Length: 146
Image (spheres, rainbow, N blue to C red):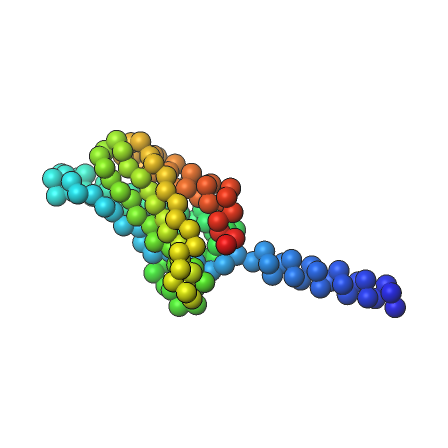
């Protein structure tokens, strides 16, 4: 009898741990751009930045999902999401940019956390490196568990 109780206790503990480890669902909105100098940029430069916005939105979703931090829902789909993330890039110049994310509780609309990372350079690689560093920071500080 004692053996059965012990076995049931361990099974209950295992179930509790596995459900606690389940990542929260996240509705990730498309990243946005803040660039006051955009009207003065060439058409090619605007296209490149637009492509980078799409690139980092996809990379952010991929990294959050791959690392098991969130279960990322189809972009823009908020019904049933536990968290909603808004991402934006502030372009100060071609040399100085920052990538930001704000994650809110979908039920209460309270901010869970806000993170930012500065990047130097306006290339696909610098933007991607910035997104990965942003996700590293969230993971290291365990913000996704809040």
